[in-house]
Image 1 (tube, helix red, strand yellow):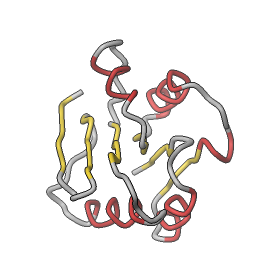
Image 2 (image 1 turned 45 degrees about the vertical axis):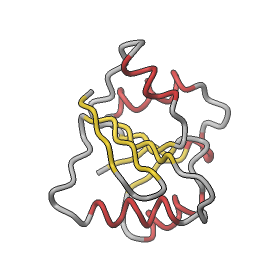
Image 3 (image 1 turned 90 degrees about the vertical axis):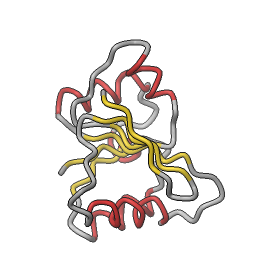
Length: 118
């Protein structure tokens, strides 16, 4: 599993994921100020799952026709500590029933999950 953390995804979560063996490339580290279209294009080209707090990726997928087959995980959270997205993702990844590839996945503060096929 390979992930691409959008610029708004907390570095504390990136570091926590990496410490648990999850491969995460961070836009903050190598491509700051990239547009959403550039990020989604990179994800498509390299088959990376996007981790983001930006709902605009839904519009790029469902309105503009971008198809990141590895998926997008949108953390729709407010008032959380920086490690919460990583801890949430690690919990989900430990569940063999959780499938994220090919889906636009939305995770809310109450940890409810909604998914729509890409």
